[in-house]
Image (cartoon, rainbow over all chains, first blue to last red; front, side):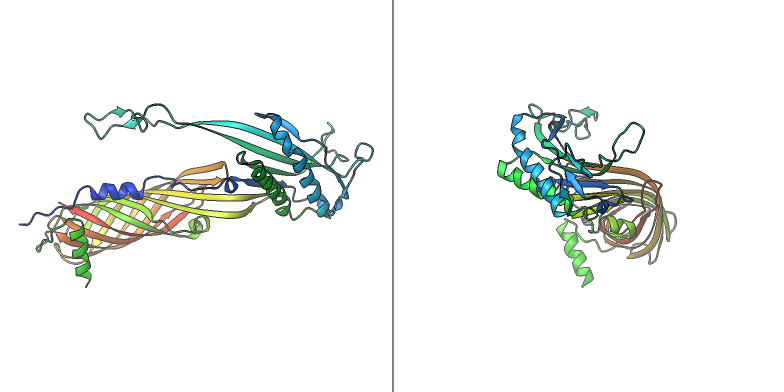
Length: 209
Length: 198
């Protein structure tokens, strides 16, 4: 009778490599982590408006910002204006005295995020007696910690001449959220801002006169 | 020619071919599974899956029939770029879509051929399927996990290569019925692996 045995290590090793993760990772560039989301009202006729205005400042809506973020404000505002003009809307330059049909409010949120790599409690099946072991990072000194900063530019389009309830609230008829990592050189951030503001209008084909 | 390949595979795995394969009462197997999505799953994740495994145990009730259970795991993933629209929302970015399916089934199989020889079989499984669905978009993540009723029909063949071991080849069509929160998941699983007999 011959000795017949498959190497017992092959199967578990094969399985480990095949199924190393429920969610196998992907590599991304910073640009690939940018998202542009737009929301609209399907029953709104955006071509019925003629004029627009954009306030001369970007509103901070909390978060973790210092003065350095202000260096992109003018760029953001100008990109919004130029896109609205390209859509055929006329810019109201004296919005304090002449109410524009549309106003695009620009807001900015920058947040610092801290990630602490999890140490999963481990079931110590590899030693005897089995029991709750130190977990995945129990053998390493210290705990991995990472930090990243995210930024969100929000564009809200309102119709100041119209209110929709008794409290005189104005309705947002279009919104755009431009989200991504705040990292890289100023030139790279500037290029991403321009690309993503443009994208917000490109994917909103219902806008325009 | 086919037997030649089997011999090569067996030797690669350290198996010495045994001439007189024996009958068995219990068979446990571990098979690698390649998944080809169909239906709604294909609409969601178009790429085939090279990450899959099935653990299975069968008890021979007679020369022709076995009952048992199986637990599988198949990981589907797709990366998409562009603008995705739904109702009054448009989102542009890079999406990574994941679907994990974990079918947990009781099984029955009917065998052709003779004990100790090559055994083609037909079978079926019925039970439950755990689905873990996740979409990563930029820095955001949306998950949707569900339990489904599921079943599969199966065609396969068991090829003995040693007195207590064989190679198991099979094709099964896994189907997880839609739930109120999820569409149905269906895929063709092509499996190859080893079976240990007792």
